[in-house]
Length: 162
Image (cartoon, rainbow, N blue to C red):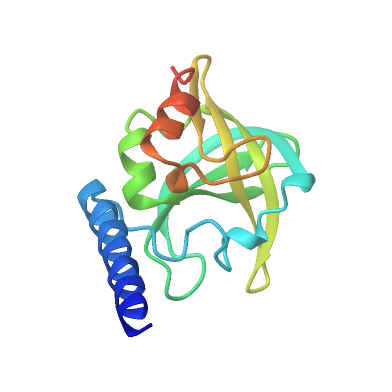
């Protein structure tokens, strides 16, 4: 019995080390942004919305204390001129993917309006910028964040992104 418990503990330890190694090997720090986290649970996939506007700025954010830094865009809503902060995701995942985003670009934001500490902000699932650029951050079918997908799943999902 002790041998079984020891073996089980050893296997769990190895799996934990492999997971942590894979995260660090990928060079991504997504603490607090993971699927199932307090932040992720704010995303209600059944309450998606779309709005158009103009990209004003790209910002670094920490949506909830203790999370790693993320990237958001400030968008002026075309309909009412309101400035909306749109969360894209963790910095290590998002920054390399949005190098060609610029202030002044027309954008179309697909996502969910959420309330965090009394502020209303968007959590982005997909972003269209200009005439041709598309950025995907969450699965349409269930809202799963792309940074929590395996490499193969991510390649499949991003294969149609231009």
